[in-house]
Image 1 (tube, rainbow, N blue to C red):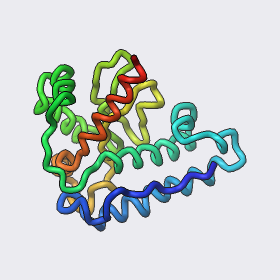
Image 2 (cartoon, helix red, strand yellow):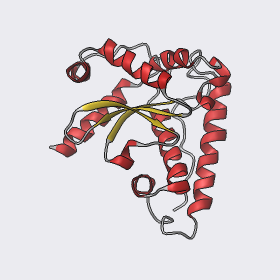
Image 3 (cartoon, one colour):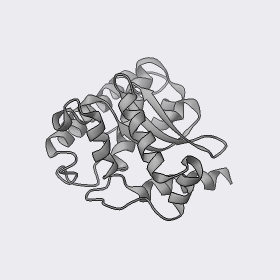
Image 4 (cartoon, rainbow, N blue to C red):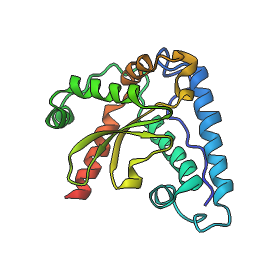
Amino acid sequence: MKFELSELHYDLDALEPYISKKTLELHHRKHHQAYVSNLNSLIARTKFKDLDLETIVRVADGPVFNFAAQVWNHTFYFEGLLPGNNKTLKGPFADVIKNNFGSVSFFKNLFIRSGVSLFGAGWVWLVLNPDGSMEIVPKSNAGNPLHIGLFPLLTCDVWEHAYYLDYQNRTQDYLEAFWKLINWEIIEKRYNEFTAIAD
């Protein structure tokens, strides 16, 4: 199976002023594309060549896992963004967050602190554990919750290529800006898909 770069569902300048067109172009068309190209080269003529991406992320290790996870992580990250989103988290899913974290504001602050405190490059995830409880999980490098049996709902890319052109070393400013772009509808949809499977 040959993997291809996923298309964005918004224009390259649609996330401004929070994420610039230049950053998004570099992030998606250069970094994300490079992960796709390297993964295709790496798995050709191997036992992974006919597997879907999620399966590779779950079972592989070493370089194959790293490139497969980076392809999956980036697609998931870009899908979770919504241009011009000024909506606050509310409704039934907000109640789910409150039940797990006490309040939406505490959840937001904890998520941002987890990203700021992540050493080196990596990802911050909101995940569902097998018992249905929620947790914020920072993972270094290409770390992906699927690999350890967790169900991802939301992620923020904390590799420098995701924000350095816009924010330099101000990781917290980037994470605050990211929060204004979250597509809560798709996060809630992912949650509902998990609960449907669990039932």
